[in-house]
Each structure stands twice: as C-alpha cells, then as structure tokens.
Amino acid sequence: MPKIKIVPAILSPNPKTVNRDLKEIERYSDLLQIDIMDNVFVPNKTPQAEQLKILDTKIPLDIHLMVREPSREYLMSFIKANSKLKINNITVHYEACSSIKKTLGFIKKNNIKAGVAISPKTPLGKIKNLLDLVDVVLIMTVEPGFSGQGFIENALKKVTELRKLKPKMDIEVDGGINPHTASLAAKAGANMFVANSYIFKAKDKVKAIKKLRAVVE
Image (cartoon, rainbow, N blue to C red):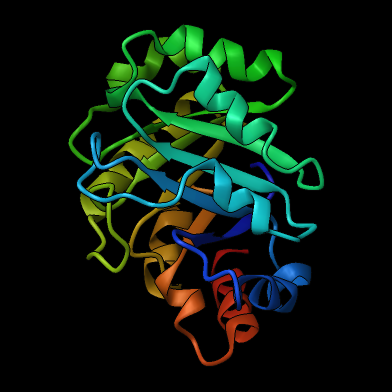
C-alpha cells in the first residue's frame, strides 16, 4: 500500500489570508491541491495559473484541472507560474481530454507526475488503458465543480477495483471528505484524501488534519 497522504484543497485563495493559512498547516500536509475550473467542463470558474503566483508554501502542489482540453501552453502556464513552488502532479479529467495520452505524456516530459481523474458516473473501465501511463488516479466522490457537496459512496467500488488492479498506485479521493467518509475510502483502498471544506472551515485546521490522518493510517 502506498504512503497515506492528506491533501488540503483550495479553490479561489484569498491573497490576504492564504499564505497565513498555509503556514499553519504546512507541517501537517503531504500535498496541497489547487482546484482549477474553467466554467466549460464544469459550471464554475476559479482563478487560473495566476493564483499560483501569490502562493508561498513548501507543500508540494497537486494541481487538479477541471478544464476542457488543456493545451500544452495552458499546462506550461502552471509549470512556469511560480518557480518557488514544487509541483508534484498535474491531474486532468478523462472526460475533458480528446487526446488524453498526449496530454499525460506532455506532463511527464516536464518531470511532473501525471494524474487522471474520473467523475462519479464514469466507469473505471474507461481508463484501464491509461493505468500504466499515470502516477495518480483521482476518483471523484462528488460531481466536479463545487465544494461542500454530499459524498457519493458508490464511487468507492471503483477504488476497490482499482486497488486490486494496481496495489502500488496512488489512489486519490476528492469530494465530501471528512473523518467518516475518509475512513470508508481508506477501507476501500484509497491512500490520498483531499479535503477543502472540512479543513478550511474548521476552527482548528491542524486538529482537523490530525483527525483525518488518525482514521486512515
């Protein structure tokens, strides 16, 4: 089983408070997910690569692109946005890319881990031919686009199936994650747990992260 990773997520960071919040959780976070939305693939829009310019953190980034047909130039805008930041992986959606193998290959050519995400209604079988090309598979446990949605427990069947196929794969779950749902996802075989609302709306963000880690390790 790969290492357990707790992944706080931000959508539209407040320039006045984001770095203070990140310093608070830096020691306790394995990755920081940056959720990017284009109002095309999903009905919501967040700041694009420019938001990376304001970040000051040592937490490696997990960039989740909920974006229709991300071009090479678009991907490079994130890679080049802030040289102080370490990008661990860039994850694109299977449903949003017509040439997904080329997109994943371009990410890896830039010495960045490549991830593929699938929405709740997408069967795992759709990406089985990509599993040897990616480092991370993100199983969405809500419909992509907005934080604070209810957890779709049925999506965990895909986690269980994928863990059997790829025992050493990083399997990430994103959407409605809290101690209860994280525990369910961990039992299914996930090892990466993304949380936005649960962590950043908590009075004590560090305590929230510790609770998550306690139930999945």
